[in-house]
Length: 146
Image (cartoon, rainbow, N blue to C red; front, side, top):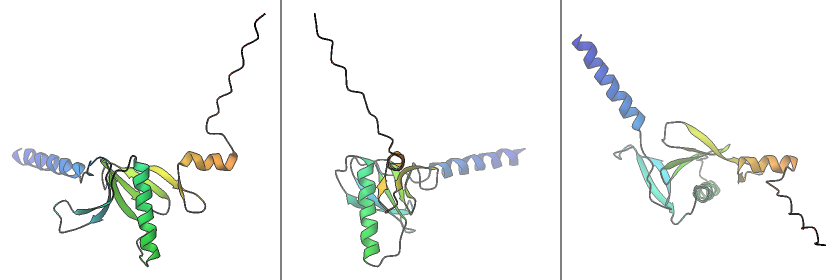
């Protein structure tokens, strides 16, 4: 009986430790490049890419720009990880994904167009079928009085 209680406590501790994971820094407007580092306490090293970034899209663009420059210089790393205001950013061949942790779930954020640019997924479909973003009809002029 005592063994079961001890095993349950250990299992609960392991589950809570694994679910916490590494948290992305929440420095307002700062875009980071995240590098795995076995010598660091939390297993990652953060390098500032840009400051004063108003939105996560701008940070993703700075990370993509850095990735392309490294590839142009002969680098081979086609996938990179970044961080912006509490979120991790994952850039690969399909586009940009965002997640709360390094190992947890990720959701699709930006897609690659046919020529490799990054775009909001809905914008790609609009380019294919010509569907407008959102058109509001012009107001009708009031009828003339009398």
